[in-house]
Length: 317
Image (tube, rainbow, N blue to C red; front, side):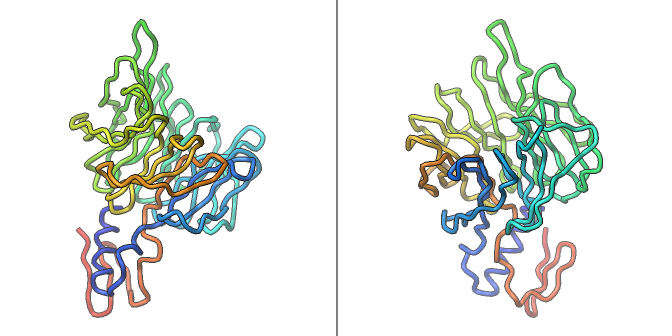
């Protein structure tokens, strides 16, 4: 769905003369610049950094809904809970799902159709979009983390400590079909960790963080575990990659400047630029899945797979 949205947006831009820069979307991130950790949103070039969510104490990982209208995040008020807020900071509501308890390392991801949410708390669960019910889909003695839906909704990538030997347990990337939830290991590092997978919008690559080179760097790999490419090579931690809506860039968190900041680079690792510069720690960037402010006023009608712009009807793939 995200790839379809992008293709239609580009076609709109070509018909209306809109700048491609308008399709960049926004980036949500967490920061300690206000003492507690809060959720902020900024433009893709790092401008207009705005507080969106402050539910009380230590907010974590804001995840966008597929329409870009809402952000789901965790907050450690009391025993910890999920919160849902509009992307402009309005209508902040606490989420309570029977039978599910949040963990300090929990992360979330919406399904591409917006009907379900996948979340990890050591096991992986799928929730209905109204958060009325949760179903556990992994149940292993090792911890499972970082679940993310593929753009076509057919796969969930995640990281897990299931790989272990006499030296200890190591975090690798795994993939499971949403038909049978049968996990398959796609990376195998003998003594290092792979973490935080994220799908490219076309579903052809996974970006992730790994310390396989001796410190934490950003890599990409094919979903079948082939064609590993290292993108960063800094002297400190690079973590939390997230793809731009068109797949041309990757934002990530890095400690290369002495504290955590958000950087952005081309998807081949070139042109690494700083987006934030704050004494607090800026981490966990999440790029919005749709392009902010891309649809002009000449759009007259929208139907499944089609957008009408002026006298032209754009047909999605």
